Image (cartoon, rainbow, N blue to C red; front, side, top):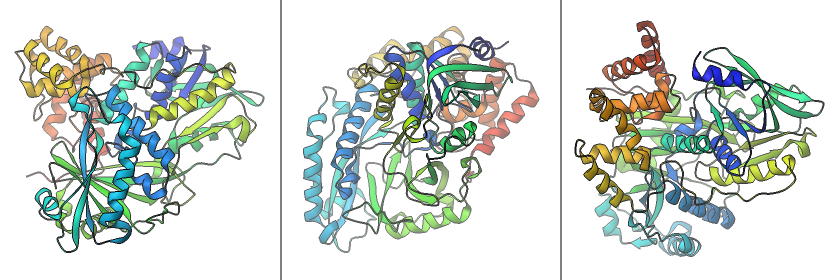
Amino acid sequence: MGIMEKNLSALNNEAFDLVIIGGGINGVACAWDAVLRGYRVALFEKSDFGAKTSSHSAKIAHSGIRYLQHADFTRMRESIRERMNLAHSAPHIVRSQPFLLPIYGHGLKGRQIMTLYMKMFDLFSKAGRNFADPARHVPATRIISPGKVLEIVPEMEKRGLTGGAVWSEGLMYNTERLLYSYVHSAEEVGAAMFNYCEVKNLLFDKNRVTGVSVEDTVSGKSADVYASVVINATGPWLMQNLGLGGSLFTRSRVYASKAFSLVTRQLCPSHAISFYIQPMYEDKKAVVDKKSSMQFAIPWQGYSLICSLHLPCPEDNPDHVTITEEEITEYLSKINQGYPGADLEEKDIVNILWGVIPAEDRGSAAPLKHYRIIDHQAEDHISGIISVGGVKYTTGRDVAQKTINLAEDQISGRRTPCKTLYRPLWGGGIAFLETFIQEAVSRHPDFDKDTISHLIANFGKHYDHVLEYAQKEPSLKDFVDGTRILKAEIVHACRKEKAKKLTDLVLRRTEIGNIMMPAHETLVSCAQIMGRELGWDQERMTTEIAGVKEAYLWHPRRE
């Protein structure tokens, strides 16, 4: 019997303070927050941790500058705080990235108004900009000359250019590793975290949810797990999980839209370039600009990540949603209209990141402007269950704090302090990043600086957990075919990070498939190592390789 099977079986009829459904960013952040407050927590994710929308974010730790057009200063301050918190909690993953918005003409998008915007933004963010570590420093905004804009982006349209606005955002090097840092952090302090365990039913005692029936989708084992409160943290799948309660949840509604981003050849290596496109929906809450949508071309691991186009979902079930070739072509056209110098073609696309997110209304392309935390006791007269739908990766910690506050009201009626703000995540706790990297390189002369830097960028101060495997088994010091990923990382993922499928390894535990679908030879090499760890035969390895290829919406053209 495998470890997962044994653990799930051991939970049968067990009682927890909190059971969390969903292993995306909001679910794992809730687990970490709750267990730090002293509660017994179990989390169940029906596929892999972060396998859906959380793995396809725009990689930006937003500081909320776009909320200026909504005059939403509360959300902007919230975003600034959470962006600074991520830089403190996971400095190895979140780095400062300059953004550039070319300015044309005058009026609402002109130089004078943009100068005012930047000054307002600096005023709100001043207190959180300074860190002792230079690697985390967030510089003040600035307005630059047209000539300087063209030095940075020579292909930018010159006609009418009056300058550029420059500010800094956080760039998340690897959002999948950041999410797994939450998983590790929650487990270290006692949370029971399960992937590939699907909640099949909600358990009731009259008008109160008392727990869940769970099935391990790998082994088929099942268990009934009880809880004082169940948190439904499944985002756009929220309604599907409420449907497990039959027709009891009639007043609560959460709708879905879809969004996607393109990974393309690199457009600008130094700055994320901001530009406007014609939107797919009218932003009715904007007080400044309702007729355009700001886009970003972000330098990311040697490519550009261009994000994001929002579209309505024709299906109520997120599992039936996809992105069509026509929608990709339309987005390319919009990008080239808004940023003519990009001159992108389909052959320039190497990957498409896409997901389903909560929407403002049924059939709307507009994403939900605010997270939703639903107290079903108040809305549906069903106690013991709370639903949460978030819209931003950056504010996952804050949404979790508010969700657990509400859960505490139902568990004990008293509030205990949240302990996650400015607390290092697993792998964090690095005072000076560059010094830490230099010292690590000195301690491990068998590995070059690029390899050590890569490991620290993914595992933080626990990078040596991976190197321990390589030191015990020298063959694991080698790179996976066609990559700069150590074979030891595969072993670590299997033994310590619940990787059960090749997609878990390629898409979420390592960087192997971050940018684009790996070459077939690379997948074979990964499958062979993982197969030795998990006891796969040749047929299983072939199936797993096919599963990775099917997971990619876009297959790049290879020379």
